[in-house]
Every structure is written in C-alpha cells, then in structure tokens.
Image (cartoon, rainbow, N blue to C red; front, side, top):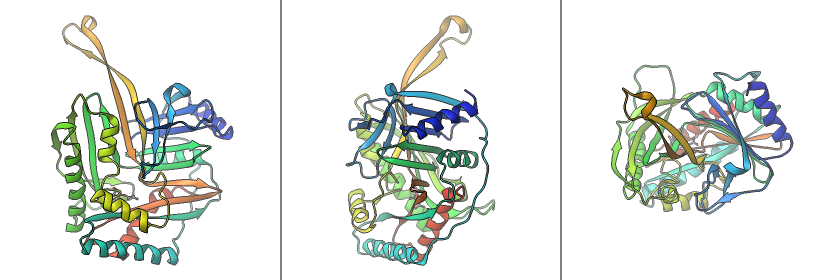
Length: 371
Ligand SMILES: C=C(O[C@@H]1C=C(C(=O)O)C=C[C@H]1O)C(=O)O
C-alpha cells in the first residue's frame, strides 16, 4: 500500500470515530496500522489474546485491546513521511512551576525520612493547539524520532494518545526475554564525552537491580549489559540491556505484574512509591507510564538446518511475540488541547528546581512537533 492510500484509510477510520493504532517500532522503517471494524471497547485481564494492547499506569484499571481478529492490518515502508513541518514554541507557567517544585520537595522529604528510596513524580503541561490533526503530529514524530516507538492510538470511548517513547518495557520472542533499565536524564549537547553524577548513576542502578530481581523467578540465566549513554531526541539517558530465557511455565501476565510499573516510572519500593504518587500527584496519569504494544503475535521465521542444501532443509519456526513499550514522551489530544505528560525520578540527591527543568526538557520531545 502506498503512503497516500495508507493515510487516507486511517483518516477515514478516524473521521468515522472507529478505533485504530498507527505505530512504528525503533527497529525498522515499517509503519503499521490496525483498524478495528467497530467501536466495541475490548479489554484484557488475562493478556492471553492477540492484538495491540494499551494499558494504564494503574493496572487495576482496564487495559484496552484491539483484537487481531477484529482488525484490518496494513503496513507501509517509509524513511520519511510527507507532512508540512510547521511548529511553534510554548512556555510553562509559574503556577505549574511552584506546584511541581512543592511536589518534588515532598518526595525528597519522604525519601530522607526513609519512607522510600526513589519516586517518579510527574505533571501535565497543557497547550492550546492551532492545528490538532493527530495524523500530522504522528508523521512529524515519525520523521524526528527514529529511535523511538512512535504511535498514535485512538478509541472513541477512551481518547486519543500520541507519543515517541524511548523505553521498552519488555519483549518476549519465543522463550527470549529482553528488557531495559532506562533512567537518568540530561540534555544532549553535542559533546563527545558525557559525564553523569552519582544521583543519576544510583537512580539507574536502582532500576537495573529491581528488574533483575523481578525476572529471576521466570528467567535464568540473566545477562546484564554494561551501562551506556543513549540519545532520545534532545535528551540523554543511561541504559542497560537485560536478557534471559523464560521457563516453560512463565505466563505473560506474571511478567507484566513483575515488571510494570518499573522504578523508572514509579519508584522503589514499588507499592510505597505507587501509593505516594496516587496520594500526592493530584491528577490522574491514565495511560501515561502505562504500556502499549503488540501482544501474542505469531511470527514466522524461516531457518536452514543445513547450509549446504538450502532448498531441501529450510524449515519454519513459528514463535509468539509480544513487545511492550512504556508510554512516555506522550500526550493526550482533547478539545483542541494537547495534554503533555512529563515526570522524572526523585532520589535523596535530587534538587527540586533541577527536576522542574528536567520536565521542561522532556515536554520538548513531543512539544516540538505541535502547532
Ligand atoms: C518519567 C519519564 O521518564 C523516565 C524517567 C527518567 C529519569 O528520571 O531520568 C528517564 C527516563 C524514563 O525512564 C518521562 O519522560 O516522563
């Protein structure tokens, strides 16, 4: 399917108020879309169905599913998508600044009292839009962020979300489990040598240790890569890659429950951090810091048993694959407004004003493509 037909099918779907998702994973130049045939709100509790899942931060609320069997799927291959690149600046207000600094200060105080070790605190930044065409925003995100999972998700009974997230929650392909620990943030400044403070190194280590501990019951042996610096748009983060082989009895739901939400977006210890967030953030995160992605898709790979006799020995392995990304650097489109969701990890060494600046820098990822 060519680009014009691909996006006109999507536009028709949106204008008919029918659910869809259009997305591209960081691994290739494929843009995929799933169009649900009616507007039924499907949810999943078991995570055994196949389709595309959109799950909230607070998993006690419903995870929305676009079931594979109720959807039409299209794929487009493209390096860049055609779109007019108009953008404009926006500024945060002082009220929001003071409210966020107060919230972060509360977090630091709780950590110093020993109630928690790390908590991720966030806020919403609202921007009035001149143009609120979700598909143009999607195209701009796709052109700008090749290393991100870029998506636009819509359900008439839930809302419209867009994002460009650098963070994999986890991926399972057959028995192979891959996840990452991503934390620590600084602006990207085009220098070759990047230095990190103890605050960020410790913050990321908390995430790595937690993930390794949580997947231990399902997966052995666990390999943890060295920590590296990665770029996500105008930001840098610390990242480790964690892999393992899951055992036969491990269910997808148990892995989700073990990992989501990680200390990268919630904090540590998990329940205390979550309680602190729900009590103090003063707004509903909804799907921000939830997760999204393909669930239980069958993926066929052709292999050759014997390289000398390729024709006769080719065989196909069908593996089930799920890949979930953490819903970050995202916004919700509502009544011609963009609600941009941003947060950052707080530890004992955090400085409230710097955390405020970090959220400003994070709004730019998605704010940079809005008009
Ligand atoms: C919470 C966010 O990002 C997370 C928090 C980070 C941090 O505290 O340094 C870094 C990457 C993400 O894991 C966000 O972008 O809103």
